[in-house]
Image (cartoon, rainbow, N blue to C red; front, side, top):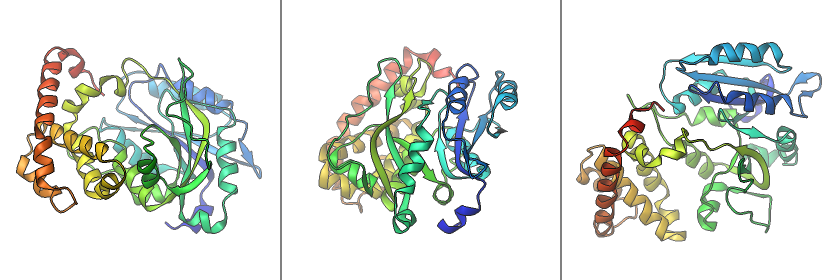
Amino acid sequence: MVYNSMVNLKYLFTVFTPTFNRAHTLDIVFESLMKQTFKVLNGRPVFEWLIVDDGSTDNTKQLIETFQLKADFPIQYHFQQNAGKHLAINKGAAHAKGRFFLIADSDDEFLPQTLSIFYRHWQGLTEQQKKVCAGVACLSKEAYTGETIGSKNMNHFPVFTYELPYNIKHRRYYDTWGFIRLDIMKKFPFPNIIEEKFIPEGVVWNKICRNYKRLITNEVLRIVHYRKDGFSKNVRLNYYRYSLGFYFYYMLNLQNNADLLARYDMLYLMKEIIQLFRVGFHSHISLLYTIKKLRNHAIPIVFMIVLLPFSLLLTIYDLLYKKFNKNNLKTSP
């Protein structure tokens, strides 16, 4: 699919939600969509809501059926056996009918003007810019504190740039959110690692944001609800539980972006190497294999060896943490 063929798609936006046993939070997304001020353009719906149910055992399906009866916008529902969010995203992209793909987690909330603002920014680009633009990015805030995630940069915003190099150069290591052109999402699918149910989304976002530009804004258009059972609350256990997925992410990031990290943020480069060895130990991957994979990517072997003790200490800490949190480890993602 090329850029010009996007005009043949049915909607402007596919708001996509991957979900697993989150019937108790999906109403947050639904109510946000019901409140959108931008629903019709030229007599046609502006967006659809596409849900991929990643093997839920609660009443998610029945809940979506009630939403479909109430909604004034189209809703698609698809079920898959539990395989992980990354493969749910692939399935969502395959079924999407919108020009722009916007991922909303199952407890995400956004402003009534969110879709309208996104579209206004897109329309403000020239046709030449649109051809090389993956989408528009914004900031988020935490629901309970009201605090913006990351710090606003008041200089030269919005900025149209390759987002990954820009973020590394300016050390913007925090959560941005926004839509991606559907044709680009399909061009960069998540890999399917057998029996691995989690792969960090950066595996795909880093590729997109280095190869395509994005319009980055300072506007806060999403509200996130961090929960006790959410992924971010169990990060230390997840390094062990999904070590192979993390290994794949850190390896790709270092192979593809070590040049940027070495140029702009050596400390972050060191952290990424430490994390790679850490999850490599958990995955029982040979240390020599890891070093060989990196030695041709501007990372000296001596440099890696110096960082090994830090990885070992973190690995031991993870194992001790796991020992005293066995119940959390058994919880499904």
